[in-house]
Image (cartoon, rainbow, N blue to C red; front, side, top):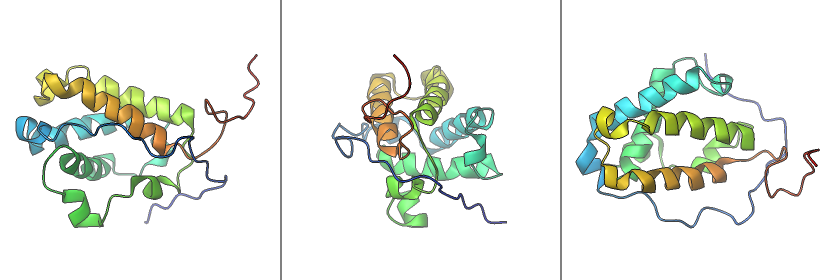
Length: 161
């Protein structure tokens, strides 16, 4: 069975366009290794599996985590596994079918930051690059928001006073 989400809302574009921040260090891959990146992503997806975001993901979360890991490997200085398997990342375009609002972004970020709490010990994540990687995730995830449901700065009234 093919997993194809159906988009119901118009596409929202975050103000300011794509993030203009520094990408994560290209040294991470050499210091961490591919196996640890795959383990980290699998653990992250296990957290997502228990979250409200579970319906956005295909049935096999371990398999889905491998796709994320392939992207991260190339992002942090490893071979471009994702591009080799699936073509250019174009992550925003790939996420458009999913309705991602600010609340979903915060859940995703929380799951990832929880996974990274013991990343130095659990995955041999280089401590000197952890803050920069988290900053990347914050900017990257902001750009994935594509549904305006009261996103900060969206101009939409959230009903809060």
